[in-house]
Image (tube, rainbow, N blue to C red):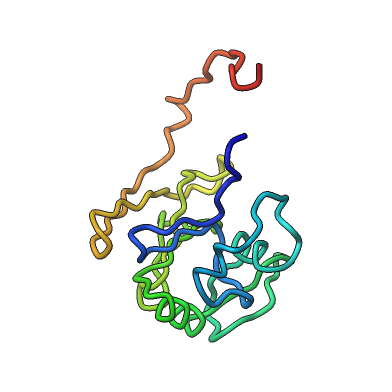
Length: 161
């Protein structure tokens, strides 16, 4: 069997990549490592929070209007980065019209990689290239114009056979 999907990744022991954000139940990277991940994403708890939490202009924690995860602020982010000797938390999960957005003294970045989300948002997308831990370079891209889009021929994907 293939390994279960990851919900976080650590780059060079200094950059935490996660889909959503932080959890009030998680203070250390070791606590993330102990989460049972071979399961559906639960509706609450640390696993849920890592997937669905969002940064916001609050000091600590606030209830998320999404109904899952938390809103977390600069104080929480700075403490987590300091305790775990991190340089950056890199996340996705929220549309950013400019493709990426740094927050909290550049301790956190949201990277959005779907251009013109849902074919109507008109947003730029990005990926973040890390030359090394302290040298990061966003690569921006736009959606292919509608006039240049083609529909690929339908084929059966061998994965499902």
